[in-house]
Image (tube, rainbow, N blue to C red; front, side, top):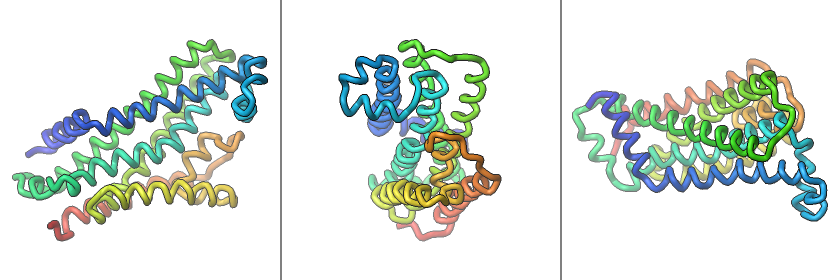
Length: 258
């Protein structure tokens, strides 16, 4: 089985699974909520009558395109760690949970073709999920008629959204290793949740720029202001992604598979 055939098979598994549609539905809620908060900000009377919701909406600042697109980037940075990690956990963990790993290992194909096809399918799926959130978010922004839209805002926000997506998708390799090592879903999902919580603690302590899982959120201006990140922050993310990729490949090639 060639690499491209393996990619097609993995893509078909994802498309036919209930997991991807449930994930898509969950991810849809985030831009809808962001649009609702901005809509509340646009209408002061509604904000006053909304009580706690109005108070929460005030935290985000002004109701305009720059603020709204920054919120979408933050959704990808924080929600993407969870959602992309869940997709990765499913793609790699299901082979053990459904006991189909033995069938994969008996195929007339090198294991490297199979593992790289899985990673390609995961990266492509996660990137499409991010594009979906951005497109839906922009459509909602046009629907509620946000002000301060310009080519400069589009280019600046587009760069932030694209970079945040790449950083977040890169971190989705580590759950793959834990799915293979533990032969299931629970360990990688637990690892993802732990990293999200730990990222909040480390960022609050002022060291988020040195912790890979906090970098996407910091870059998306989750603190409300743009914090300059050094080259080391981005290298930490990409080295983490490479380590997760290499560890998963090593496991598939050399670990005993039962």
